[in-house]
Image (cartoon, rainbow, N blue to C red; front, side, top):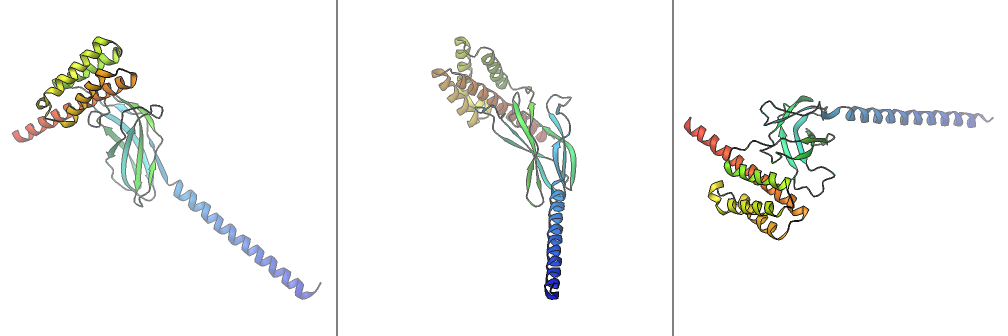
Length: 247
């Protein structure tokens, strides 16, 4: 074999071998970086949610990891995937976070404050790191407890909701619910002139007069609950304000 050809082939093998080694090196670095940055994140619930001893808060344990540092944590509660017609809006609930790369703790949800009392929702944990990336946990299904109402109007609306739930097609029940909504809406001064409560109850009463299909009944129940929640929350704010002024 010609000496020049032998040397040329020898260098070709060396260059080819070196090129393959270089590719292997970069591939190894890429794989290592992928596993480093992806296994450095963990976001999930740490056990089943439970209701506090007072019966007013839902406590949700969680675990959060992010090698880039946790900037903020929040819960997102929304309608169930199979319930496309649900009137439950998606609610973003901030979670107290100390920051850092590891954050294990518990989140507390007041169902009344966020309009979740008596409802079933999908809840997932969301984390934003210091680079601005947002990651989500798998959702869990939570049945939120009914709230305890102290305001008389809130109790009246909740009683109407329960009657409508038990007898959705009964004509007498329908008339009673319409009367309740119209009577409460007639005197806005009794619920701090809240325009949302006034318009919701008035429009629901009018609609219920002309329609009693399943969708309308579901929306009326939801409006009764939301209106009761708003009245009760405003009542609590007023009481807290009175306590502060007395101090």
